[in-house]
Image 1 (tube, helix red, strand yellow):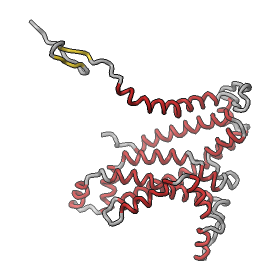
Image 2 (cartoon, one colour):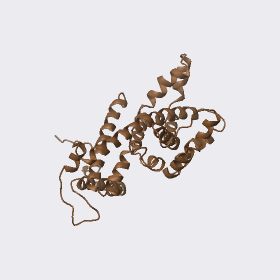
Image 3 (tube, helix red, strand yellow):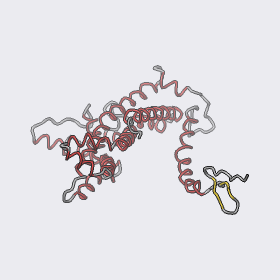
Image 4 (cartoon, one colour):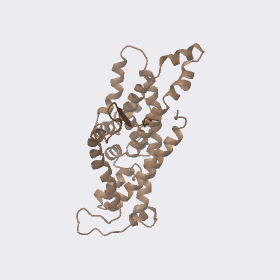
Length: 313
């Protein structure tokens, strides 16, 4: 009794040969090869080389003298007797404070702006471009612009003086220095998050809002019952990239306050730059970088676990 061959997934049947196994297809790998080369050259290699550097007393100026120290650079970050301990954890606290003050407005205000810009009104494309325009500026331009605005005789203090209010030293007193840096950052980067939310809002079917309106739901109820659940994947993404961007703060405090007053606005990236470039302790700076990468990885995982719940279909 003749039997017919069974065709398995991935096999190709032909009239002449019956079943022919699919060969290895190189084409998909050739498409991803340019990106993989870029990824490996500028991300993978620097990452593992940074771990390598952190195990040495590394000196770029003296390549003949780079003694292996093992985990000593990491131990110094947790030893109160080391000179790196105070500076490292102070900059971590400073960066955490900035993340706490900057991420909520960069997410909440961006979402509200996207909802407003998603409406149907005359000139909405102009306002969309207007809110996104600051993001096209470099960090140098944005930081210097707000440095000038927050000067003791700048626009903000002139306005406060005309209103009969106090005129704080925005860039040399706490907590006003963080307020100035946060305002500059929100103004500069909020347009990016707004555009992402706006694109996601346009993908929500209008029929959902029409059905909710028929059922008697007002706009606020529709926002929390329809908009927020439908935007959950995008919210997780925006919170994650905003968290990472805020944790990599460097240009704004470097140009606006130089880390002052008394290093209270020195971010962790400024500390790593000072440790490795200015003080020529590259091994210690590399250990700080690895520690920051580990912290950000943990925060990213927690973000997906907390805000990504219910995202599975």
